[in-house]
Amino acid sequence: DIALLALFAFSIVAATTLYDVAVNGLAVDLLSDGEWGQANSLMLGGLIFGSAATTAFAGWALGAIGLPATMFCLALLICVPMLCVIFVRERSVERQLPWTQGHVASDTHAVQLTAWRPLVQQVIAGLAQLKVGLCALAMCCQGFMEGLLLVAFPLIGTQIAGWSTAQFGSV
Image (tube, rainbow, N blue to C red):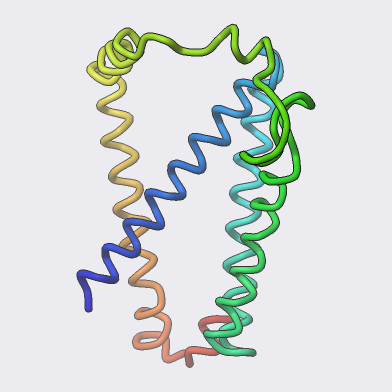
């Protein structure tokens, strides 16, 4: 069912986007101004390396151990950052889990947002700028091409180049 598959893919992308925004917010909260550039570079490098390594592993695993075992291995891989989120605290006084002891740190409480309207107005004003629109258009085009190639490469490899599925998965 194509509609269900599209909904599933959209849900994964939406969850990934929310996770990315949360990690960036955490970095802004924890790092000083001078460390943001270096941290952003490390996060982007980690994203690229992680995507490449996961793609290579998944391609090999699909041919070697099959789809169910590959999905199980990738699900275990997701547990690593989730365990870090559970067991690593930003500040020592905060709760580790919702039902454990702890309280809000004073520096966090001091910057707590109380008025959402100015924040939303600033975001809308920022999005209305021409350069932001052009950047969004460029990113949409890049994403479109990436999605198109993601679908086309297996077809090109197996139907035009004549590779088997196992050969294409090992590339």
